[in-house]
Length: 279
Length: 173
Image (cartoon, rainbow over all chains, first blue to last red):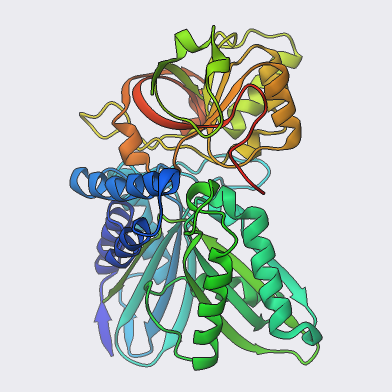
């Protein structure tokens, strides 16, 4: 079995937090640049500000957004690798602590939802671990801001409503809440599973590059259909009308119960801070 | 159009929904927790740590400044979370609200009644907006960290008039 030191994970996570918050992924930047060409007036100006912001943030290592997010990690942990001097949860949280404090990122986590005391170091992170075969550890990081997370929603539909019901729920959620979530948006859609897992898969769906195809042809078509319909809503950049409401829709489906059709919409703002590393 | 907030106090009606402006002047950051405290203080007739009459409030919780920088990233947060406090805040004479996203009908009415203005900054362009801040001072509620009240001196801060003093709005629902 391959053995690695927890320091390797800590350093990698520390760098992930900084890099993701300073540098917009290339696919997102290209997508914004493409959208500018379709817009005019205020919508165009706003998209241009977003592109200029990405350049300033990268060049001067200033956070893209002051809300540097709740730190989400989707980990694929190989069954033939182990951390010899600690555990993955400790290592990731330590990396978040160092990444957020040393790089002047905002600490946005409160220890209790009602007492609301800031933990001062942006921990604890949301850590989701999946055991896979192999001797590698893949860590996907998503810095998720509160505004877009607040616009997200889940619903337990019944099987009879089918795809039309799912589509209606997604469009309704985006139309009602999308203006406050800093559009153009990336929409993660979870379908199936159960009440607890549908929210998770809608978020996990966001770990994809804009322009990538869903491996399932059926859902690949549905993603295009939803993207088209969402952009017809006319919400536009920052909700001030336009053609660009969403840059991408990613669907993740799971087996479910014969009585159920759970659906979840996880909304991601244009500041799509996502980065994946393999150790 | 370049506008000075100080001049605009006297003539808020010149701005119309949809108009782009570059503002200069003093703005105070206050978001969820600061609003909660301010309204509680007002209800107890306590003194508010800044002059609310004709003030501009910016819904923002900046990231910490790196050494050598004036301020960290400082974009707007979602305004609608403050809707529940806003009519009370406007009653105290606050003239300008700066944030992002839509407001409730109650807030639109209150803006109209008080001849106030709601302006929006582009969300998620916080590095760009940090360049417009020339000075920052901590005013109150230091224990709230990013949610403390800061006094910002801004120059050429790019905003859009989202709700004008007549209650016209830029958002089409």
